[in-house]
Image (cartoon, rainbow, N blue to C red; front, side):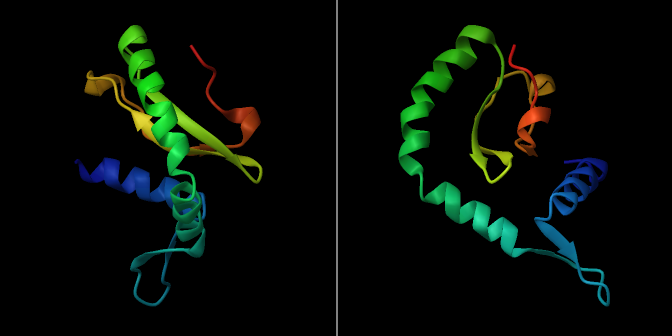
Length: 105
């Protein structure tokens, strides 16, 4: 993965409060928010299992990457992704305020 992509991703997760940089060492580390999001998604494994076949069919039918999101507090958190085979059309999982989420196609 190109360094610029890694840096951009790191900036995004830092802005979202999932990663912090230690001021004295300049090393990055996960925050409790990241642990909380991971724990919440693990509590709902049945949701991903139920959605997976539908997401697969939708991805094949549309040729698009399909995301499964959950509303947590006031943000939509991506908990699962079924990727399109065309790497140039894939988008990563992220989180959005509900009013700023991408429009469905």
